[in-house]
Image (tube, rainbow, N blue to C red; front, side):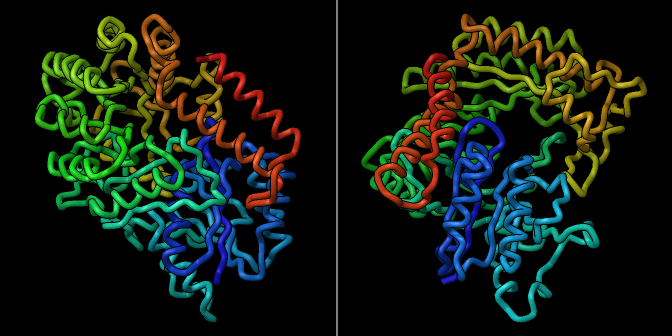
Length: 499
């Protein structure tokens, strides 16, 4: 049986992203032995090298790096080089949703997008005598690196089965938050959005039976009830909500879901509230972006802001009465027609009406290089939306380190300006709102956000994995080293103190 080892590289916090496990599950369905090593960013280089030595066999065809947001650290760079030199016949495959913003000489093949069909095409070719001659690589990268644009060349959507099946060696714990997909694709085409599958017209959901099998397995084997929903928009149709609500009724436990909910549809279709509550969809992330009506209209979310605000407050009351509700309002600084004054008005409404929930604000980013990013409508015609390249020299001194690094290393967003503000000002406005609201315990319930709860549960899961290695030698071994234990215990103490 052919073997694959997939390293799950997460961007921030401590988490178990689902992409690696979805690919592994799909490979197993096709008669592979595929193992995932989670928490890669939380292990030292020495421990990672030890684990890989234990896992590589004569049947290993490739080692994968699953990196959802193109996250690539010095450790992973060094590790890929060691794998290449130590096991020259084993291929290294990088996969993630974002296009690869770097060129690593150790990586043989890059896959971006939903990768089930792409990894099947690649591995089939690797096992043939003619190598990868039949694989469709993205012509944008010829001469630089071998990139497979999965969504274009090997689309894995829609799929009636999106099931992830975990193994004993994954050490899933009952308090963990796993990820689930109800479907792939979004019916909408917001101008600033670069999600790859937009404007979907037909049914793009998985089968109800496939969903029920996954829920039952994760509960009966691991005791898991809590899920992140990966769908770009969960409530894009009432039929979808009812379909999975009816499935949830057949379960012998009540699941709990958090994910993206389009707020104008939530307000307009109140008949969706009851089935959403029955499903257990109580963690709702609202991509509102703006309460400035001209801005809302140009980005395709033109509901009257007064109606939207009143409806959100009513929805909050309804779902709070039904279960453990958590509502997050997501805003964006720098959209067309948005000024510092209109943003201030929005911030004041949030602070006065959204107490004990959660809200966040991000600066508008406009990526423009198709080699590295999927381009939105706004990216393709930013001048038509009132943007231009900023003329003044960029001063990053007062910015958070995250944005300093992005700008200084030439991440492919333009440094934009319009008649109302510029990119740097948008970054600062978003950061000021975070200080005013998110970090203020009298206004925000940040300490009770599902993200922090999931972060803490993942820490405990990793701690359990470490402790289990002392008892015996189940896979993966080698995580019991003292410095890793100290790291996790320090993190756990920090989370426990924060509530």
